[in-house]
Length: 173
Image (cartoon, rainbow, N blue to C red; front, side, top):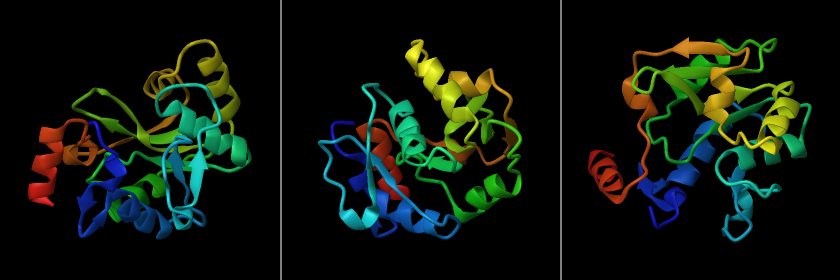
């Protein structure tokens, strides 16, 4: 993208603030995953990456390193259509006996790892996978004992990765 996706304005505020506020409606504590060079305001509770890994696995593992006994509701900053309804659906269908509860993206025919409730039991397995070279949370979910939620809301999984997608998203927002 060439710019911090969290700073894209959506519904009158930066996306990172929008998601932080949204998550506060259903989580006791909310953190903002970031690289050490990112400037995240203290009120958004920055959680700096602790591993030398690229991609979202770093944030997931870093969260578990902070509180390994807690479940982590992970939402990517570039999923602009995440709603209170989607978060509550995820929490309602949670199965704490599984490694995670996640939506299944019908367009990708795969789990959506960045709109997922990760259980503590997943941490050592995710870490083992990452240390073995598999840094794909999607691949992990596809091959693990997880609770899938099938949604007909295909726009829920819209991911903003390119400037033209951002521009279209802003026009609609």
